[in-house]
Length: 212
Image 1 (cartoon, rainbow, N blue to C red):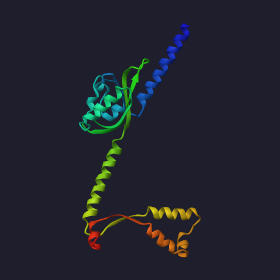
Image 2: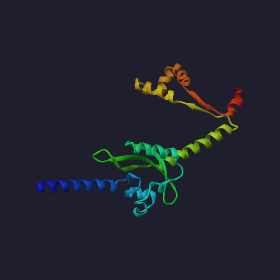
Image 3: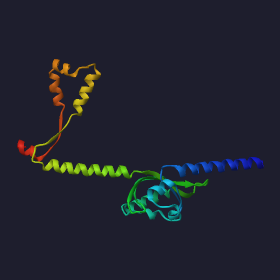
């Protein structure tokens, strides 16, 4: 019985070591806090993203990463959710050690003991900073394009040909291999395709030109 007990303990210890290694070596930024919110573990990925060393964050509150971007309602919602034993998932803007902002697609999971009592919280997720920056850059580019589009003295309009493409794809699916020859033989199809073209946007110059 003693041998069996020691073997089971060794197995559990080995499993715990393996799980610890998985988290530590994971590319997913992860940290763990106690029930009061004080950090007792961070993995290498989290340190790499934030720029801190382990000694600078252990024992600290995650307020250390507070960027000032998130509203108070975010924190109220987060604590209300995780203290009720539920997972909380959100994209949060955090601050790195150098003061820069990074975006954390974060999932906070409450850890419970065998009695169902919460004793810690695990936070893990993806660093999506590059994605967020790319989306913001695209929005800014679209705003600049729209400003140029609207103020241009040249008549400009945008057309949507997606319905035309779908119609051509259906013709090909039905065995039409030479589209040019098919349209020469069926000129009425050209008119049908033209009618499928949709004007989705026009600028002021078009309105001025047409008197609309």
